[in-house]
Length: 68
View (cartoon, helix red, strand yellow):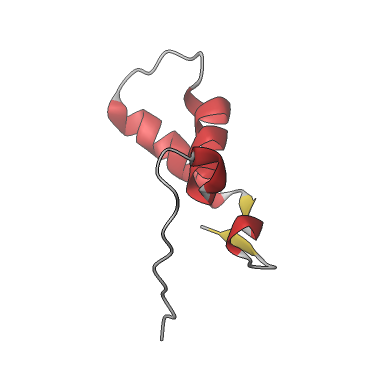
């Protein structure tokens, strides 16, 4: 079974929210400075990127990486 915890992050502190690092990485590698033909192709490209990379969630106190 899943062990899910709610963790509250300070408002307006994206540098303390690990998810913001994931989105920033995806934006920089997939969508930044590129013409997006349509939303479906952009979504597919982002999903491929997220599934092929590991992201470190050390800010959460975890010692392991998370893979999508």
